[in-house]
Length: 88
Image (cartoon, rainbow, N blue to C red; front, side, top):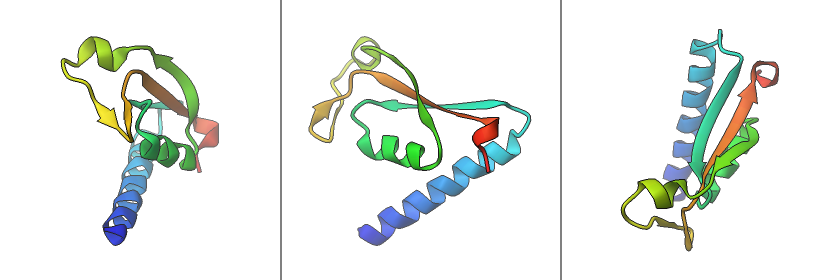
């Protein structure tokens, strides 16, 4: 399990970097995840993304069933951004 999680993170970071390089004419990248997706929040911040804004109650208003993750309900859609000057 641990080995597959490490592979998943490495693959994910390569995909994000590929997208950033492919769309290098864009100044800013936005990613969104649930407030309960602690692993995703950590993943994006490690890649240099910073909190931008949130849409409150997004998952309550637009999803018919509760989403429980990490023992808490997903309620808000949180956006993280990375500007061109922050790209390596």
